[in-house]
Image (tube, rainbow, N blue to C red; front, side, top):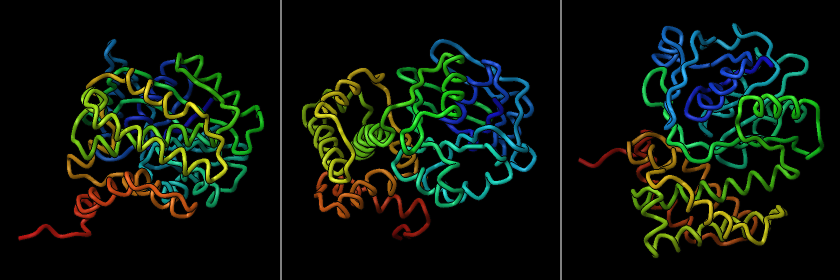
Length: 313
């Protein structure tokens, strides 16, 4: 398949590199020094088991130069999805479909509004990966997976083709029977892990060990499950327990992109993680006091990072 990775960050870079290694035709959409490094020296993926180098790598900052592709995997930040929907248009051919990998539950509907329902497949992934420097993606190990499916849950040839491409690359991949349930399952995990991590400034190994912060994780998960069920998403009765078991398998030093962005003073996806839990909970009439506390406490730092709140003095 000819696959464009729109946004060669942690997730896009990791999964794009795996596809390219397996022989798929991958076009990396990047910019600035990151793009220059990929063009000059290839895309380097550092993992606990060794380094993977994709060189030469097809990369550009102009989607029009990529031409039509079979699929576009959108790996930008959640607040960039609307802009990305317009930017990917030059790569959209008659049968092209788009898969968002953002940590949230609203990206697919945003893309569908701009590109049409028929162009969009729901998607999510799991990977502890980030940009370590120009042309370099670092992966912390642990579970790396990708899931996607038609928004109406029907089986389709295009989903199966992409699923097979990832399977051939050795990536754990699944086309869930219920993509909305899968998206909310990931949503409960990242918002809880990310929010508590950003508040405590601690990695998962500490958060899950200290009884008080472990309980905070559980409370966050319970709130998201309640919101999902109020929105007619069929969350499993074991959703909270299963996610806590997953947290116990994450490498102890693991953190989320939200936590890293906030600590380093960068704009984060706070509004699309904990902020979205609060907003969607209000719409559904479900209280979310723990997520509301986390969101409100982190909001001043987020506003400062976005230049919307001046530092005192």
